[in-house]
Image (cartoon, rainbow, N blue to C red; front, side, top):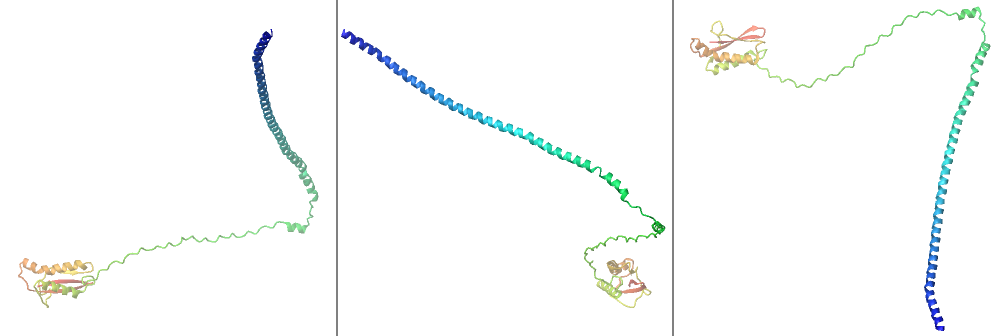
Length: 261
């Protein structure tokens, strides 16, 4: 019987051990659940406080905005009142100042004194006929003269003047005659004196004048003297060995030169 009791007790203890272990586990899980619940509650409380603070801040901002908007109309109304007030004052001042001209106009006839006119004063006050004044002619206006324009003549080189020769007018007759004698002697002839156009033969002479002078005259006289010996032979005469240069003054600075044979 004792053994049975002991066995029964041991069996009950063995059976009660897992139950006790389960109870401990259950208790642990319950405590863990309570701890997590407390933590979540704390977090919820923190979140709720944050949300409440944010709502309060938003509410404060909205209140300040509303107060500002409410203050602006007041300022506008005050500005309108200030603008309207000067208009009323100016109209009142205009009304009070308007009757002033009437009073001044009414007072003017009373204060104006009437001057008594005597015959002497009337005679003195009579207008005198103006004496016509002689019209004064305006002074003659001097014509505007333009300032003289200074003209600067361009610098030009002086023309090169050729040296005057014996063939230029007025002529150096003796020099011309001496050169012509030299031309005849260069052709092999002998110059002689004493011959004149009246006692000698001659061909067409050359006349030097103011219209025929210079280099043209020189060439004509040289050709005349140098060609005469050949012309005499060409026209049937015999060859000559002597000649004479005769000069005739025909007046006016002109001279005629003869080749005589």
